[in-house]
Length: 127
Image 1 (cartoon, helix red, strand yellow):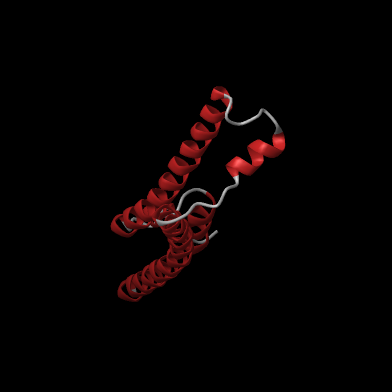
Image 2: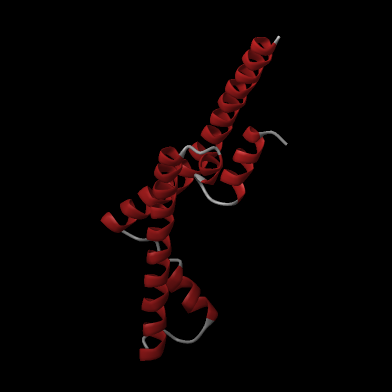
């Protein structure tokens, strides 16, 4: 399997930016990983925050221990600036992942062309 495909699969299925690390493009890999994982971390923080709020409501008796009531409390749409930041974090995560996949493939192809050119130049120099 060639480097472009391996880098693409790493970025797609392991972690955004991991394909860049495989290609030794550490700065790009770090940037993409930080972008995507910071968005994911914020989304997880918000999910845990909502779960704690709902569980506190259940324990205090404000919310009955019924599936429908719990589902309604969990699935409430956020309002205001919190909704904006959740949407921004979602887009940061998705775009970081997609850019990581596409750029890993592009960088892998570029690296493979450079290596092919170097091996061809080396072969010509030895003849």
